[in-house]
Length: 255
Image 1 (cartoon, rainbow, N blue to C red):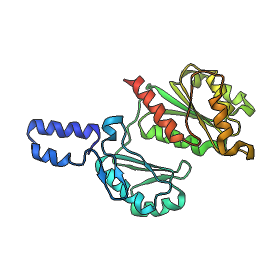
Image 2 (image 1 turned 60 degrees about the vertical axis):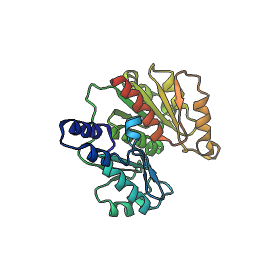
Image 3 (image 1 turned 90 degrees about the vertical axis):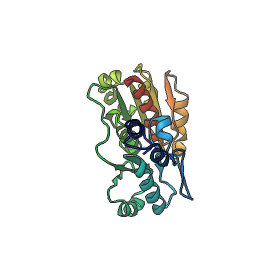
Image 4 (image 1 turned 180 degrees about the horizontal axis):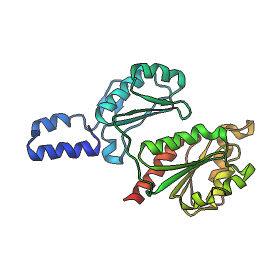
C-alpha cells in the first residue's frame, strides 16, 4: 500500500479517526523495503520516483518471479515484469493466472482495475523503429509507457533504407513531445529523426544486425556519435529504460 494515492487515503483515514495511529504505524512498518530472503523489495520507490519497483525477470526462476510479483501486488494496484521468456511465462501464469503476458515485448502485467490513461489531448511520446525486427524492443518501450499512463503513438518499419516512409510520419513526429527511436544495423534512424524534430529524442540501439553489428555495439556507437543535437542514448535493447525516461519527460510536461 505504498503508492502515493493509498498513502494519502491512509493519512486521511487517520485524520478522520477511521484508522488509529497504531493501526497506521502497523501498515507502514514495511515502508522502506521488505526482505524476502532472496530479494529485498523497494516498497518506497513509488513515493520517491512516481512508479513502483519493476521486476527484471531474466535469470530469476519462475518461482522467484511469482513470489516477488505477488508481494508487490499486495502493495500496488499495477505491477510490471520485464524480460520474461515465453517458457518461463507458461510457468509463471500458472501461479499467477491473473497476469497478462505479451510475448512480443516479453512484458508481464498484474493490474487491479484499469491502468491510468492519458487523454487524447495529453502530451504524447512517439515510438519509432527502423525495421520489423526491432519491434520487440519497440513494443517493450511502448507498452511500458502505456503501463505508466502516458499517451503513445507508434510508427514501425520506417528505417532509412526507405527514408520516404519516415518522411510520411513527419506531421506526427513534429508534434510529439518526446520520441523513442529504436534501430539496429547501423542505427542511422535516430540521427535522422534527431535532425528533423525539436523535442527530446531517446535512441535505443538494438542487437539486430549481421556480424559487424557486434550485437548492437555498432548502432550504439552510431547513436552516441550522432551529429544531430538533443539525442540521449540508452543501453542496447533497453526499451524499458527509454520508456521510463520518456515518461518522466511527459509527466513533467503534464504538470
